[in-house]
Length: 194
Image 1 (cartoon, rainbow, N blue to C red):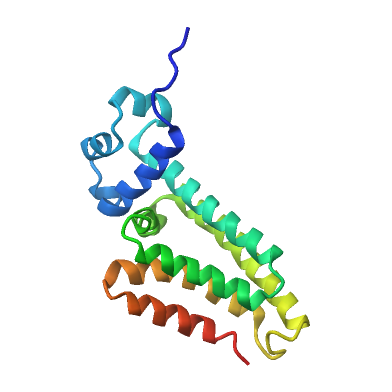
Image 2: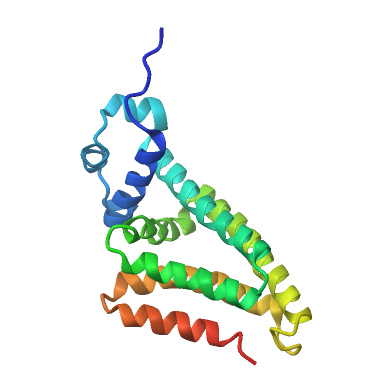
């Protein structure tokens, strides 16, 4: 009879996000990972495989969780401008929270891997296409409803919003001044104004 796992695999993924976010992929040794996760080496290998495989699973989990929430929110909200503002507000609130933002920093580690890791590059390409389309579709709706000017390039705007979400994480990592996050988000949103 197989032994039941003695840990919650989703909690371990969230903890892995924090560890990789703090140390970066390259700076996270196997020992740092094992100590931080609180699991045995064999359990790590049996459940997740290698450090790289755990990293990819953690990044994939993070990106899918966040992107799915954005897509659903954009589809369900009546006002597209309010929906986008709420999305950026939530990112800022998360990044200001010392505990919650630790997971977000895994994005910086993952983006660093894109040039030499085709699997990570593919993951972000898929995410980019998904979110740009979600923003674009929402902006088309907003334009039809008079929330966004007719002369705006909606595809370029969708790309800008996609990249600005990731840029906020970089801003949070580079500056401890939380007003910088507020200012960045406010300027990003100002592009939607008439």
